[in-house]
Length: 158
Image 1: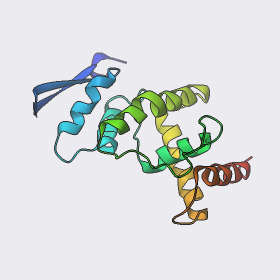
Image 2 (image 1 turned 90 degrees about the vertical axis):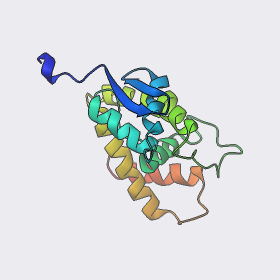
Image 3 (image 1 turned 90 degrees about the horizontal axis):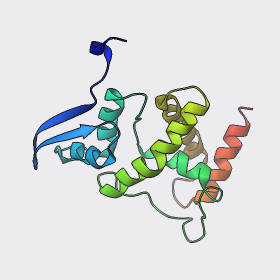
Image 4 (image 1 turned 30 degrees about the vertical axis):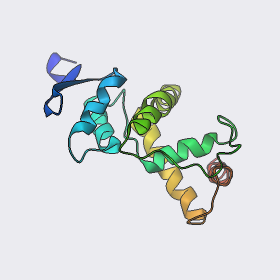
């Protein structure tokens, strides 16, 4: 791969509220500069990161986040008292924390394990959520309900 084909290590965002801001591939503290741009929430900002660095980032949205959390309900995290917990607002710092500290590392590890790309894992989670949510009631489901339906859907594939 020649230098012209390599994505930049960092991008500069002119006109951010703090002046000029830099966003780098691996520095989680810089990613939130993208959401300083009016109209950009975390899902759109992660689309920018995924376009720049497809081997290191993926798009976070409601469906893939819900699928990843739902698969881990009761196994990777204790559902006691959290059965009806809501996801953080997709425009806020807590959603960046969910992406950077939990979802992204899990997706990168899974992509490595299957010799795939983060986007492959994200697309699979998105599709899983689409199927699971079509089988659950619109309101009133719990994370355990989600996990059970996800396991049912996945068992049909094997």
